[in-house]
Length: 200
Image (cartoon, rainbow, N blue to C red):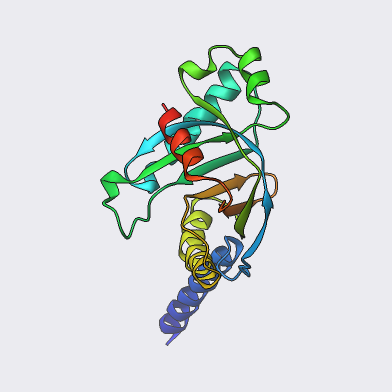
């Protein structure tokens, strides 16, 4: 009997600890979708082809190049995801991964670091009316939960209000511990294609 009680207690403790951890990562966080003006953003990035789950090293590479080689600190990473994984083969998925740089224009960035475009793309993402949502950001589990919890609401909102389908940007804000999801519906397709062609 004592062994049974101990076993049940341990299982309950593990379950409770797991739920608390998932709650901290955003499992029960409220997801609200709205439409608002966002941007502009200065993007420094690289292109990634293939499964979105493998874009992390691309973002890390950009971050470390900015920090270690250029002594340029950034606190926000981003991924710009072009394709719906439910409609396209994983090997054919297109995305950009990198960092947002604050306080500089593309011209100022390139003037200070003239070699930057040899290894990374640099572009201004324009201010735009965007369908937006937020989710807590506390590591990889938060990213997975965000995909499962935010995208269905984002897609339902866009369908309800007849918004055109566009690539979705996820902004990973470390100080705020928040992922912001933006479908910048006001940005023309030509801008998205230009960014994709510029990525290295």
